[in-house]
Length: 275
Image 1: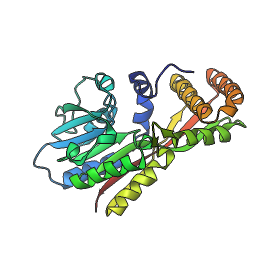
Image 2: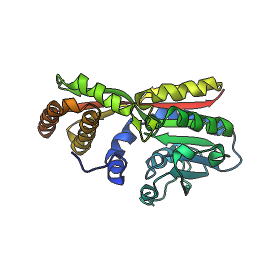
Image 3: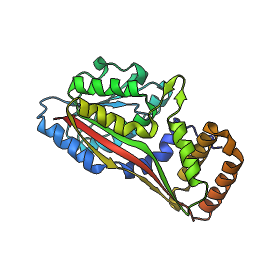
Image 4: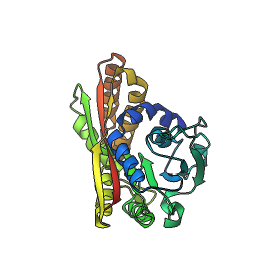
């Protein structure tokens, strides 16, 4: 299996270009309009939850009005130590002020994002629990801050050419995404619907857009690492498919080496804002 952890700086760097190509520019533009409509006389303060190395900030900040301050929240100080120090600028070309906050997301309370103009997250909702999602939504609602949550997995993957084991592996992987991890029942592919429902219950508006990765021969390193992680997770959840999964992985890697494999990994972005 790949030695790249799915929460490591190496993995975040590897997936970065695919993430940036997939993110919803339409929802980003709507978020920018919401910020402008609020006529901020102060700095736009963006709180990025589970920020990793700051990829969301680097993509989104140039699309938003300023001046901006970003607060990058992550529970892993090692990840935050890899935040790219290259200056980031807002839509008017002004440099963005960046701060970091080390805290477990499960312990996030309303005070952590008080005064936020916008709350963001990337590839986060699918690895939180229903209780953690309620906590996040409640904090956004209390702050009155629109929320843009990007790149949550839907559980659907399309591979070309197809393989007889595709469907069984997808089910096993999705079961893993919804597993109990350290006593926490993860939302997995149900995350966007759960979050949108919570915001709707609070009287907020929501908009969801598809944001798939579309990967081919030029993305071979990412596809190989993604495939390793996917097969490994599926086997961890359903060990009985181990031998067939190993053969499947070998076949898919051979197709990738031949430039004959295409992969679409489906995600969704969701924007929520006060009605």
